[in-house]
Image (cartoon, rainbow, N blue to C red; front, side, top):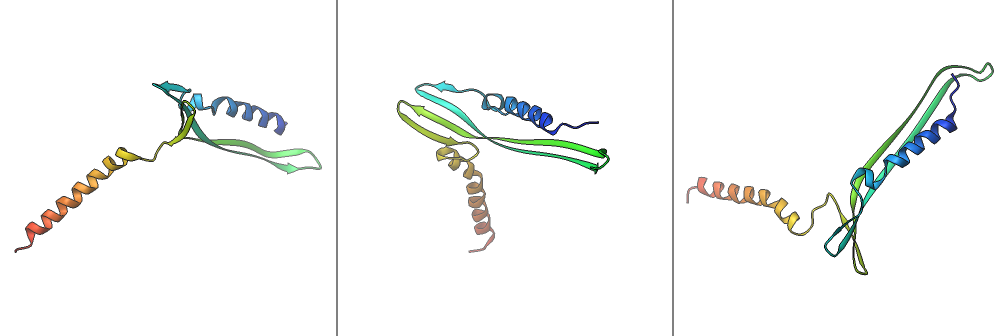
Amino acid sequence: MDLHHEELMEKITDFLKSETKTETVIGAQFELGEFKCVPVIKTGMGFGSAEAGQKETHTTEGMGAGAGVGIEPIGFLVTKGEEISFIETGKSHGLSAAFEKVPDLIEKIYNKRTTKEEVPA
């Protein structure tokens, strides 16, 4: 079997180009009131191929190829008029961050009250 590395890499690259688009992963640009939001992703790719055999006789005993892709939504570019900003996904800001800490805060308060009730005055 004759393995054409260039042809194989071209096919894999074309496939990755078509599948690793922001629109494919998390959606297209959208408007929210006065704001225009553009999703942003981060991609990473890796390729590999190997062939084992004797070069003099052009016989090949084994071969293989592979590719991998990692795709992660990282945020949104948001515009309003002439202003532009980047909002990260996966990290809490403002009220969201505060609400995420509420369960820990309630547990600490409960533990303090329980400890005070157990100790005689």
